[in-house]
Length: 358
Image (cartoon, helix red, strand yellow):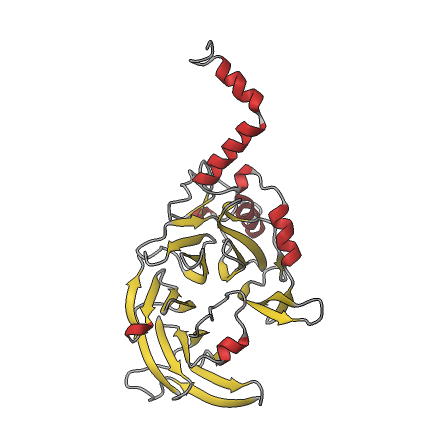
């Protein structure tokens, strides 16, 4: 199924190449219904998740229910068996940017800065609506066995929500300072970058960088938006940015904590933002077996297929410097590593201490 800016959803049969049905909203279809552009579509099938590894076309084609979001915060549920819209709700005030289906609940991000959760077991009744995040929410990915939902924003940071606790984000993964600096220099080489006091990683504010110094969002003339997120595994996600780069993201990882790896995995042409990112698993046959690829579409209307396995392995194998690790826990771990790596320094500091003569 595909959706269009003319407010229609088209169901097609790829085997025959023929159109099965066109769902039309507005134009007298329903009283008071406007033909609003549709932005995103998602099959509501068991095991089918927007961007989940292993999701294949078979699970999509077997789904009887599909969800789509429009430009006015509306969510529509379509039944391909009856060829009718069965549910509709409109709890958000701006465009629906992404959808995620898990545990019979539908999560929707919106340009109004809220995350809405609808319960399909109760005819798409609103289950929860988050507090406004003071930023456009653009993309979704589910991790930690369904316990953590990460949300990409227009300012470049990634908000971390705990499943079934939707009031506000509990953590955030910040854009590395070197990316923010580079982006700001590219947009205005003559502008001077002023440092501001940074907030902790647990605060959902508008600061880039964590701890002792970062760049306030108002000081950046151009931010790196997180327009697309796709799950790689329970600890890792791949983010598609408005600068055209695909970057690796660690989500509460046991080794790296919360961090966006600064070196890009792959890149589109400069200035061509990543608008969509999807995983595909193909059976190559023989000794190759099944292999996972990622497809990304950018604003230059080109779809590129990536094999990112080796790039991800090299990023994980490279040592991260302490300033690249974001979050209080990561900083504590960095301090522990320094003490373990330099035991002589620790002995020198303790020699003149309170217990130095013991």
